[in-house]
Image (tube, rainbow, N blue to C red):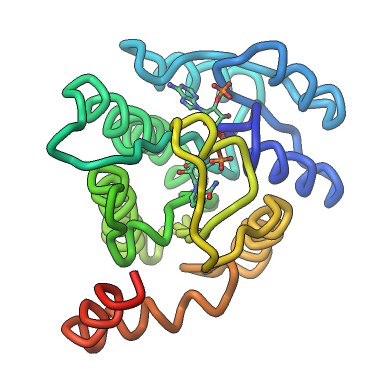
Length: 242
Ligand SMILES: NC(=O)c1ccc[n+]([C@@H]2O[C@H](COP(=O)([O-])OP(=O)(O)OC[C@H]3O[C@@H](n4cnc5c(N)ncnc54)[C@H](OP(=O)(O)O)[C@@H]3O)[C@@H](O)[C@H]2O)c1
């Protein structure tokens, strides 16, 4: 599990622990916070920074070596950046793409062949509603999460018949340190932030029921549907109610 040291990833760790029977390797950057989460889960930690070269390979090798096999990858690590794209510093663009897109794809690339060979497994990718509709002031983040959604879809087609599933979990706004860390608090009145435990429940639902896509909260699938079926109407509504 990536992103396990905070917010949604820590909640998913607690949810899997409550379910029982999962041996976990937890990844994040902050070794102290990661160890705190792991202590409640009797999991093993492998702290690393996904922007460092080879980080995904080292994490995959550690997980395979420690666990023997990997049945589930929850790719949850992610960062945001808020503001006008025309003012976004180049290194910030690179970091969002590195952490949110490239690290996830590289890690899946490392672990997937082992799952296919075993004939079972599941990859859960934590995307964002921003990637479904595009959010003003979050151009790169929206693009990064849209890339993950398309990646999950394409991978699912490719893996048909292999026994390996791909789930895309799509949260709206979640009450975690995410906003504080990106340096811009969440100020809108809608959608209201949900606790990270709601997303953890959705991840568990995706794993236990083999769901392809889960929105959190569930009603977000309706604006997603409007955006998909009548994009012009959605754009008009989004421009008006923003
Ligand atoms: N919060 C929301 O409203 C929301 C909504 C939709 C989607 N999401 C997505 O949900 C996921 C989890 O976010 P969250 O809300 O739980 O935020 P969070 O509390 O800030 O957690 C982010 C996690 O990603 C890890 N991470 C960040 N940069 C990393 C790097 N360079 N290398 C390794 N790990 C790194 C962090 O590790 P450290 O803490 O150790 O640095 C932390 O564990 C993200 O993919 C986010 O895009 C969040």
